[in-house]
Image 1 (spheres, rainbow, N blue to C red):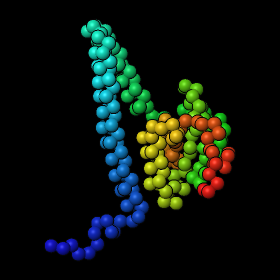
Image 2: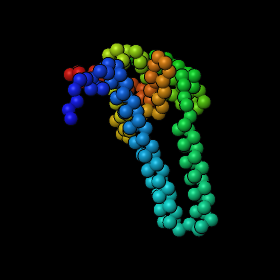
Image 3: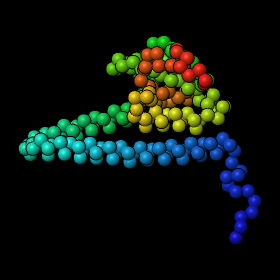
Image 4: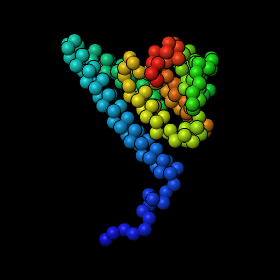
Length: 184
């Protein structure tokens, strides 16, 4: 039996379709990250067991190392659940401006580490229909493990902005500072 009339998707606004897509991507990312984290924990445990076997450790020393490893894993998971906000960083200066916001040099208050904070205005991203591109950028920065890609340490949001906390690379904007890519 063929359906007649509008399908459920055809009557949705573009905004609703984009929200549905964003929700789907968020859920897919959440579960794939959860699985990847579990696999990484298992690999670290196997590596520890292999190393202890190669060293020929006694049972008591193995127990001590397993306990220390479990403590480190627990601390790592606790840190991953920690919610960060703008109040956790002190802004030092603006180091760049772009189409959706600005990049600031910031210092994390509790550790003193210095980062580059990319502040993206949500309204501008929605208006220019760039949500998918920004999400892809964030996902790439999270997954990338390369000397050639800046590392992202944290991300969070408030009602107005999305914040990406990345490693600060002094003189890192090659295009502006050196004109390295004149064809762009």
